[in-house]
Length: 185
Image (tube, rainbow, N blue to C red; front, side):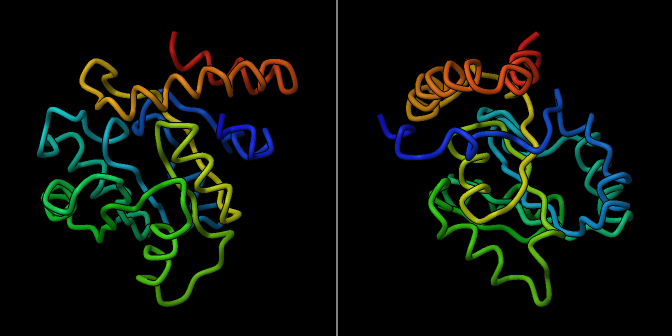
């Protein structure tokens, strides 16, 4: 399996939170974070919805008022990502091919001045979001997927692979494993 090509440490998230609403953005800003690379599908919006609701729009206004630059980064097609990004007035990268570096590099090219320590990624998958971030030396906050029932076949395949990764984490990093499993409760 592909996950054996990577060190298990590549799958350790910076933090685990139930939802994007449970992240302390003020604290992240105080810690020097200035840029958020946020996954779209099942992190911000379920697959079966196209537009953000008022609560999500309000969250984005608050995040930007704090001072963050936000880029939506998704493996999905341009039409879906663009529709959402325009609704929350953010830049975006579509067809990112996470966990490959290409999409992250596209996002970083959109930034004028940055330091890798200022960037935090937010996503719902160990295999795409956490691993992809780790490959570029970026930290990632893992959130619980919004709705697994509506996931595409390839995401369901990734979840199967993630179960193998979790077994390895449980053996070597039981505390990290417990934090990730707690998201499901």
